[in-house]
Image 1 (cartoon, rainbow, N blue to C red):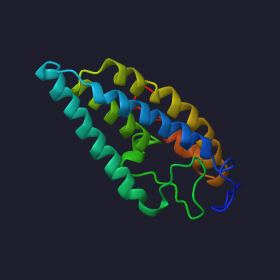
Image 2 (image 1 turned 135 degrees about the vertical axis):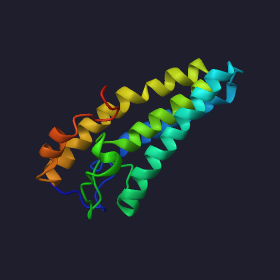
Image 3 (image 1 turned 90 degrees about the horizontal axis):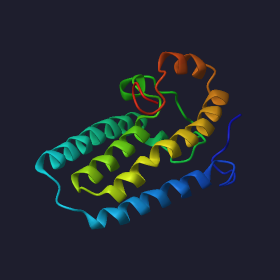
Amino acid sequence: MTIKFGESFYKRGGWWVVAQFALFGLILLALRWNEDPAVWLQVLGWVAVAVAVVLGGSAAWLIRRKITAMPAPVDDAVLFEIGPFAIVRHPIYAAVITGFVGLSIKGGNLAALALSLLLIPFFYAKTVHEEKLLAARFAQYDQYRERVPSRILPWVL
């Protein structure tokens, strides 16, 4: 089942994207009220942000023009199995979670941290939908899923 680019917003999974960006907005709003945590928490937060930038940046660089926020793959999608995609099946989601958690820790912001942690079940649910579309699109997706058992977070999820 291939979903063409011109097909409906709903059919391509657009409401997932709306919900995703709404959650991002809430996190960013909460981050406006940061505290001044201990230096070691600030360092830990910045390390998490750096990991997120490397992980997300390398995954985005591999995908380049094939990237989409929609769960449905673009028409000329390719199944990437190298780099960060050899560690987790959805490294950009891992990077987003890690980055927002890092910013929350760096700012000593428990509200932002709680909202950031909500990204885990949200992205898990989004990937359930997304992986059905990927399995329908790529015959080798089930083998890839067996080789890379971590959906979003290595050794956890």
